[in-house]
Length: 90
Image (cartoon, rainbow, N blue to C red):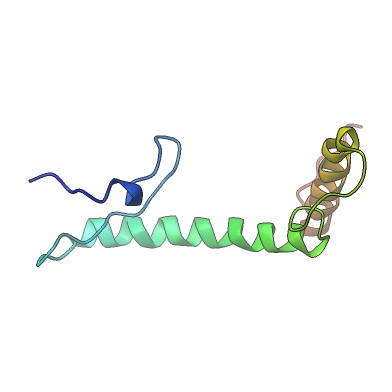
């Protein structure tokens, strides 16, 4: 039987957890995979929160639209620098 809730699956590039079947249970392997995905997802969610603190990504951008990419990339660079993942060329 085909599941009708296709919105849960997402796109090919999106990694979604395995959904519990109706009146069924997930296997231990599926539960482990879901936990692994959740631990990766929480890291990304925290980074998005840090970027939104700058309010450029969470509110309407009121400056010249051509400057948006430069500003958002600067903010992402500051966030990466803050968490220690910024690699600068020598």
